[in-house]
Length: 105
Image (cartoon, rainbow, N blue to C red):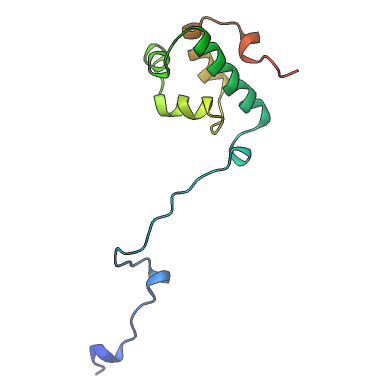
């Protein structure tokens, strides 16, 4: 019968076992990898509209009942946005669709 010392130790990298000393590297996305040029323009327009109305991101998100961190990423052009999402924002920002899509000729 083999003893415990005869059994090879598992490869930590392959098994996922860690001793807690490894550093976790956060996954980050480059702006160009995560959004399209259209989403970049929309995010910049949303920020411009919000600032012109003197709203904070928190106020917009509270009134529209949307997630603040997601909205922050939309304005920072690191998140894609949907029409459904914009339908929630437009009444709060009191703007036209053409204001949101300005520059997408």
